[in-house]
Image (cartoon, rainbow, N blue to C red; front, top):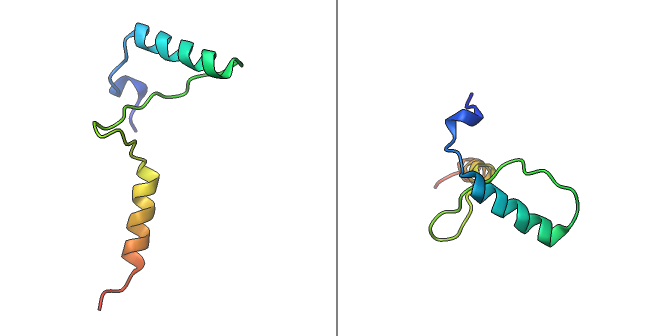
Length: 63
């Protein structure tokens, strides 16, 4: 199981900037659970969506 220490840490200034942006938009109490990077093309890959596609395609029968 991967721990939080296995992930590269963001600079505190980056986390502070993200927190300030969230506060400016929602203006309610919040807690940041995780911060994910986007791919260079701007998409965020969800491993759940990949697994869902794999399950769908593996259920198809090839002729």
